[in-house]
Amino acid sequence: FIVQCSKGSSSQVSLFSYQSNKQSTGFLTRCHYADELWGLTTHPVKPEFITVGDDKTMRMFSLKSKKQLAICNLGLMARCCIYHPINSSIVAVGFGGRVGRGKESGGGIVRVYKFSEQDNSIEFVKLAEKSDSKQWISDIKFSGDGRVLVASAHDCKIYIYDVYLDS
Image (cartoon, rainbow, N blue to C red):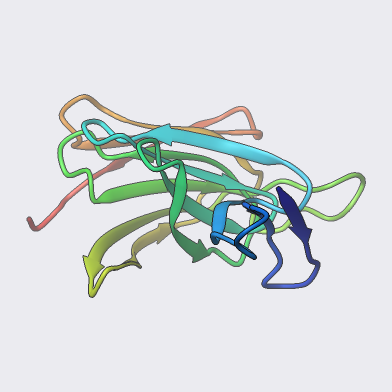
């Protein structure tokens, strides 16, 4: 195996397979590359999961193939994520946090994304954004029927949002 690490805004850690008769069989996995991974949510039906973290990305992985399926640049550190229980192409993400004694960036933001598969790639589109808290969102959950989104923040408050989806 060969491990490749790179730094910068498009950095990633990549693991390659190497066999004596072949140079490379391609990426085995890609993952978060900066500081800490925080959020993890599993798909309600499919063998997939999504992660978020300090590298300001949201990544979708397949449990079946053990590969990264998609990446979305969030622009801010994220702390938590959750699939919608009914419309599993919807994901909510809670933002904020800081590394070390650095300044908090994006604290209190809640975003909702929709993803769709087109031409063998997955596209993420931001549907909504709220920024009611001034401190980072530590956890986020949908109600069982998907009509309510609840976010807890480091300001010791809980934020409750009605969810309206067209389809």
